[in-house]
Length: 345
Image (cartoon, rainbow, N blue to C red):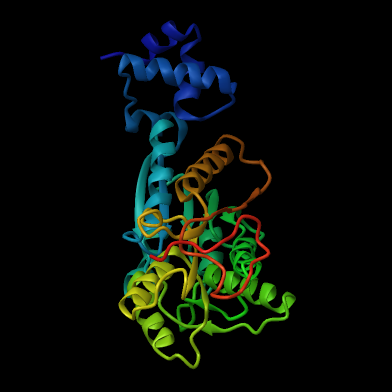
């Protein structure tokens, strides 16, 4: 098995430089770091975790805290984080902090306090009861994925912009009765609230009346709320903005089961570009959670290399993807360029 001396010799650098490149401690140019990492991988070099910890005072482990593990967005973010950490030789410890559970309390009051990691990535947390302060007080580098605060580096989608674009698309098609579906309740996520505010602002700007229909931010939640909404012809809208793609897909399924063709009787827009979006031909605002996770990991590792680096806020813009779930309402001409009656789904 290759040792660090073999890696250094093949890369044409000293053992000390090779060690800094492999452990992330001390300054090494990015070109040298990439060359050493590439050669180490080709030689099959594996650093001893214990040796690295002794040499650097670090565990080579990053803690990741998120409220849900099984949901698409969080799974994609986690995969992006893991891909970047593995590429740089770091381990990952995952903490599942579901809202309102005893497990979440223990994560914040017990496990995180043990400091078994060099840095922390908080994904989609809705800090309450001073949870953000607890994370900051741990004293290690911290990066957030989703969220708005001035105390940590953040990688997040511009959720208000995404909801505005989704709503504007429907307004441009000629819709005037547009409902926002999703969110609300005791565990209303900040991101869903911000998306609703973007929807409401766009509706107000267009001189239209906003309508928020509460539901769990899941496919079954969107389905159940949409069945109740669409089943009442007196309050049935001609279009729906889903708080996320899963809610929007639930609405499409509900419409189909009620005999309402999409998009001729109901247009639906989501936000995310979920892996199921293409299957349901869903018009949506695309984001890349995998890329957000990867960017968060890179930000954190940069802060480990440069402890004095300033806090960074990366705000991403979603891209509108038009599929067959949206069209002008029946009998209403659209001002949207290229818009026309789409085939019913």
